[in-house]
Length: 213
Ligand code: SAM
Image (tube, rainbow, N blue to C red; front, side, top):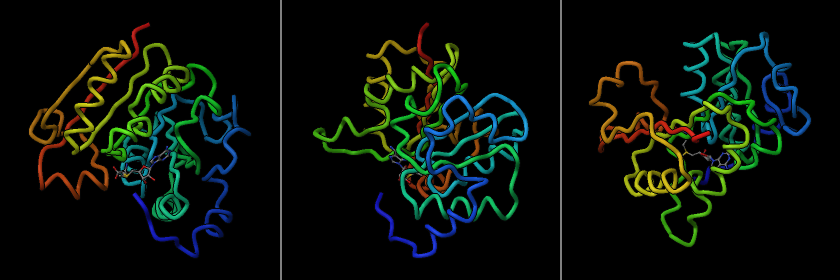
């Protein structure tokens, strides 16, 4: 997803570094110091404009959340929305989430959310999909042994690819839905921005998977 550069984004981010980390390697082993309380850590990779993670942080004060996003203009919008009603259990990180194993300690994270990740439909770009084996290896390092990946998408091709990728990696499924919004879990589902936009056009797929220890 390409986004037009926002001229205000860089200085806005610079001015609010109490809520956004620009050098994540500086926090290796120290992430809990960014929060009011030491609590389980949940991380969303590709957080976009933050709708999901901001609402999750409101609903779950007992969890510390981190939203990672690659694009400055996008995360600046997330930060701006968050600042309308900040909660002490959410931090943003401007970086490539594929490198999580370089700035989180082993087994530091309880849950990773991948929501509406870019599908990279061409097979020559398969390695860029956030559910491809190279990324799974990084997630495995940083997730707790019983930790989970929660993945949602409207893209059937990416969902099929991810089911196979997770299975080939030896992961097990806790939950799979081919139509999340018409399932019992819809009641507790927190919608992302893309989910709101694309769910009227077709089903939302979801899976929850764990690495077998
Ligand atoms: N999760 C949001 C939602 O569901 O509304 C945004 C979905 S958007 C299609 C995908 C987002 O992931 C984009 O904002 C993109 O910049 C971000 N992204 C893609 N690859 C990433 C990576 N390796 N690390 C961090 N963010 C990434």
